[in-house]
Length: 259
Image (cartoon, rainbow, N blue to C red; front, side, top):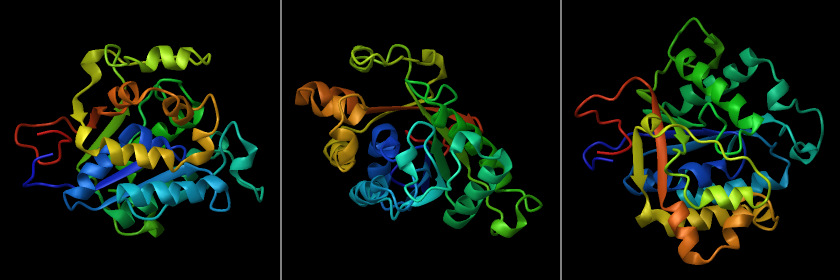
């Protein structure tokens, strides 16, 4: 990011740990430069153990307190211990968009970063649904006649999707396949910003480790990364890639993720 223009940044992700894995370096980078940063997490409720882990991770990244939409994970009933929470994939789209619009209007970010259309490498249904909700909410947040009770209208300047290119999957491909997971990636031409977050890699890794319950399990990515040699792990986490979804970048644009 250009040092003379530090845009505020809002991450919108499906699960606790997505923010650290997909955009932890960029979040830490912006916070270190004095930008306002925040994260909205679509699934896992405030009374779940992962909400506490998320709070610790966001503190490490300088991204404030958790902002939870309050939906349940498609694959994990423990994501809503008290019961009653609708799964994100089952929620009415209009309702989910409205919840997110409220956060966008409250945070008033210059840039929003979320999931890509594939649902990241493994195509998780919550990731795909979060992508759909984010696309609609970013547009709706700027229109005063939509969700009038959700705050004053605000239109972010740019929307980015965290993603992985076919040539940039690298060590992640065999790592995920080793536990039977699929590997989905976008064509290289879809990546519009590749950020070297090496200066913030240690901070990013600390945030990932805050998600202890995922680190302790053998199949989730935090656990897989924790069992790698440090050099291989650093190679994976030191680069973050994004597709700018709207609007197209222009020369001198202060709200690009890279100079």
